[in-house]
Length: 75
Image (cartoon, rainbow, N blue to C red; front, top):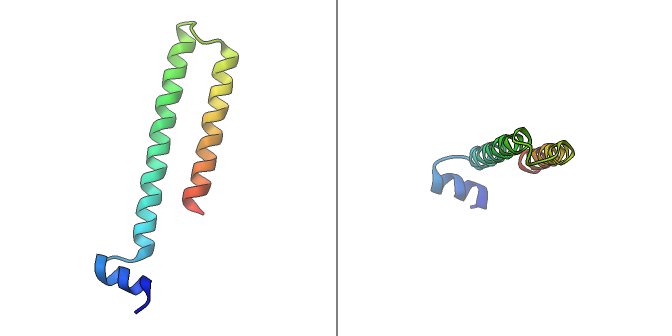
């Protein structure tokens, strides 16, 4: 018995379904983190504790992390 069919028999679901579930959970966590980071950064920018250049750099980094994580999870 190969490992894929053994996994399917033991878990009751296919390996592709579990991989899609893990990828979906990972993307959800990344998006929640990105939302929290952007809102926190905007609050700092609005209260003048963070300069606009720093907020722009932080926003760019957050979007690059989103793209990288989606590429990792969904490839």
